[in-house]
Length: 132
Image (cartoon, rainbow, N blue to C red; front, top):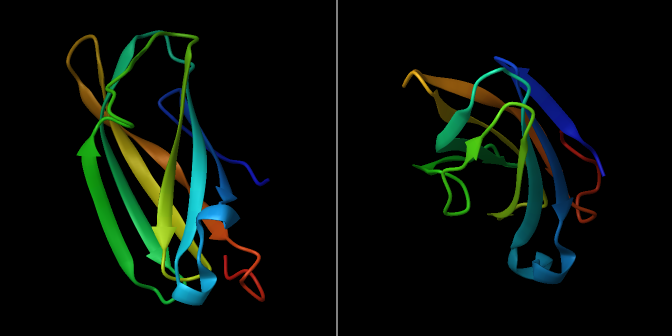
């Protein structure tokens, strides 16, 4: 399982995607992935995750954007030295694709800033040769 990681302002975001064979229907062009995210606060201030933004691109180059409040129904506070983890999922109509995005966080002073989510590849065993 490939691991992707990026750090912005001492906030480290790592992602491990994995293909969900049992939820996918290749004959119907339905492919599902889960991805496990770890957000590690390596700064000296408490931050709160306010919003998420994703760009999801399939193998044909079709892109959708997803924006929303928090992640998995939460807007967690992450204290210095703490790690927040969650798992979510994404469907695609093709056997491979890419995801990239950002989280909007706020610190105790009310400053809002974006933290990059690393680009990561969604490759299934149904793809002859991974595109990404």
